[in-house]
Length: 360
Image (cartoon, rainbow, N blue to C red):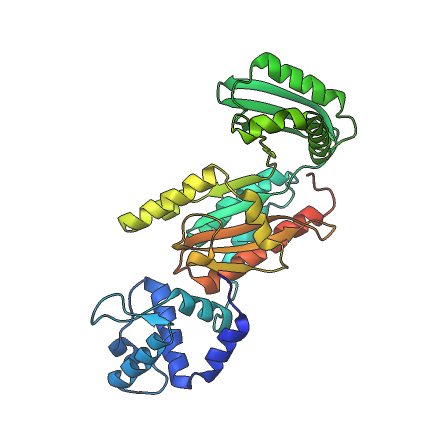
């Protein structure tokens, strides 16, 4: 679901000062404690002293506009998803506190040049600071590969060892295609090592896919009949090379949420742990610099529709987006605090990757 900021700006401009203040105070109250905000409470907080009846009328108008809703009969009001979006787009006051700034900077380390270690610490720091779940999409290592080796760990688990020309070594666990034997894996490694010189992992994948396509064209005529009968099918399984770091799961699971909310949260982490649509996570950020906020059902990346995702890309020295950091939590996130935290963290990670002496 996409929102046009100009629509929100127009609606805000058409509101009276009183309606705008009622709306802002309801949203801020809800974000602060998760409870509906009543007219009597607002009558004590309003800048101009007005009656509870006058405030109720303003609330009803805002409800008709689709910005507020009453979760129970005779209860106070809470913002709708559209109301939260308008608040974030038009009324949010975001400011980074000194304590948050210091904790983020401390997580980076003064001299540590290992990107993986830094990003792990960044994820832990984001989770600890925000009391939500942090997401860190780490950059791919794109140096030429010197050697590749496959090791079978179990029938459904294997390890690939990547030795890069710059001395960097990565071990990645993956699910191999069914029926793969240790000898078949050794043969695959030998084939790849024969064509690996000077190539990055992306280059190698492109080369292999080109070879596959060439072979497919050769046998396409013979295979077509089988495919038409449903006896055979082509399958592309492009290997994802990004690494998704998840921190702070307990912050969501142990937060006193209702059972149905816990079910949604567990569904979210099932998605995360399977690393489904990780490339889409990065694609969310590729439409420009700066923080993006996805509220409730706007967040189509994961199946947890009752959540909000605050995400920002970070760039390397070539100003190319190579990863992202974010925080996910309930829709009543403290956006005014979370947004600058995510923004500043992304800036620091980008500076780290652009700085001299940093290993990738």
